[in-house]
Length: 624
Image 1 (cartoon, helix red, strand yellow):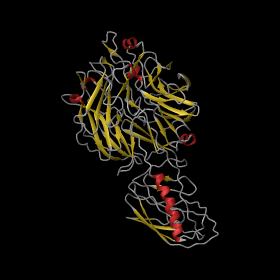
Image 2: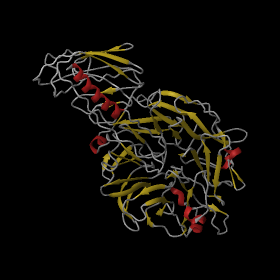
Image 3: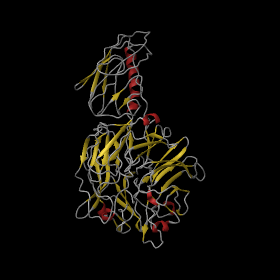
Image 4: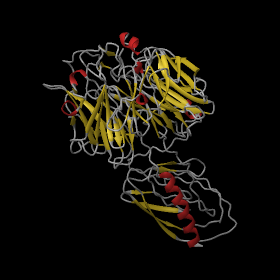
């Protein structure tokens, strides 16, 4: 009987570990290379989202203005981290639970505060959203550094320690050239997010507010394993044509997509402006009509400074449509354009077009529900959603809109990819509050909870991980959590803790006595809390063994005694050993909650089973 009980427990715990081991990471702007802004998190049901609360115990103190989205990284020795960059060239890794600083870099170099030919950002350092390569655990970002010559540098840091990786940074002035054109940091700005595609990090550049100087739209690519010589670039042939949108470079996993603004001095000969550009690895541009699209009135848009690239490129798949693989552009001319991203078509009419309202500088989001495929963005003081029909060809139709004070960019949560769709937007530089809307109707789900955030920046978006929303503002990162009564996905903590409570109810018809010894080895930053009658909160890569009546002795200084279901919350690199003497029934029913050192129940005690709910993997300033 003893051997039988131990075997059953081993099988149960193996299943538990497999479900608990999946990581959650937000490595880039809008979560996915398509820039869809979609986060899949089973905690964000409509009911749970309505009761979202700010975590006032989350510190989140940083120094500098924030124009970039925060990132979320797991899998390191420090536990889950929030990565934040600021315009002061300060780079931070914060504990995702407490908001305290794990490491920081304040020595990257002084940001530029004066001496630019024009602009509307007073401190210009790290502006674009960085990207993380999980395989090498490297963080990549662009920093403008002041000096006798102002220069853009592309950096790579160890994401776990903040140390600069060998061979970095890359001096963009010294390495970026295209068809005889030399990159000039003095007139170029990185507002858009970086992308990492097949071992190459891509950085987009625009000009500064005021369209001063002879800037161009640039994309610079650096091979992450060969930064010293592996640098390539593409630029608009005509002057200007900046890549202004907040999401920067989008990708389908092979090709890169950017949208450019107005160019000058063309004489009516198109030179790369007012266009969707599809780049191949490098970046390399073929110049063929399949790899660019511009509206037939591009010259008029140029003359009116009416940038097509008011919002970054976003890739959308619409099952049932023909074509079904699309790219969206929404511009300062007030139109939304859909193109076949596999054959853009050159200077021609789009696949679909609709007047949707003035947009500039931001990023948009897309999602799918049982009612259809949507895209959503901010148009002036409104958040607006449109559907793309599953027809041949697809069309754009109005879905819903709501008025809101502010200029934040939207993102979306669903519980499984299509259910419980919620559109989230911050009233940036407006009411300063976090808002949530029903993805199908626009009905208010979350009205801000009375929390007015300070230091919000227009066009910024928040980020979602493990039942939490993180918003990075000037000098402060805010955390909002699904309340304890909800069912959030795990949020691990590195804080050494051990508490256990057990309440067991069982009916026994067979009595068996057995003695077993179990050893649990738990990886760093492990936290697991479980009850038999509720969905447990489980940290990644946790291995735990607990059976019936257990008295675990936890090294180095933690001791917990529990009856029935015991899932200790333990410190990093802790080994727990428990001697088990259960009196069990073959198929008992048990409910348990753990706290302190309970007095064992005198009844026959069943062997409890731990149940977890598998967490799905995440799918994936202006030119005023």
